[in-house]
Amino acid sequence: METIQVDILNPKAKKLLRNLADLNLIKINKTKNKSDFSALLQKLRTRSTDEISLDEITKEVEQVRSSRYEK
Image 1 (tube, helix red, strand yellow):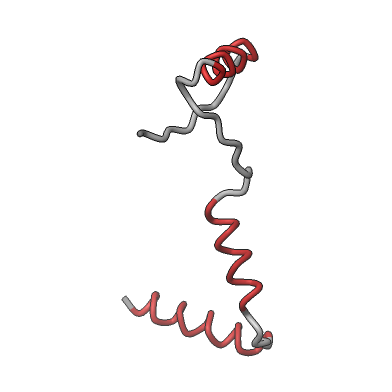
Image 2 (cartoon, one colour):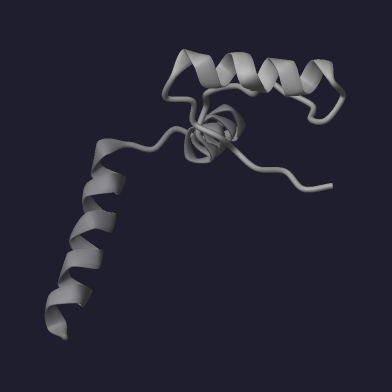
């Protein structure tokens, strides 16, 4: 069994796919439109319980910038 993702550009193609599914040649699975990145981001946001202050963020950004510009 092989899984592929198909972007349907023409409504006639969707009808053809449904006909193939009716003949038990293919199986159509509907998926959510969320991208993998947005799902990961949502997961990370819900797991985070620590609050980070603006000062801590600024210090981290300045530290990364200074190490980057040293090179």
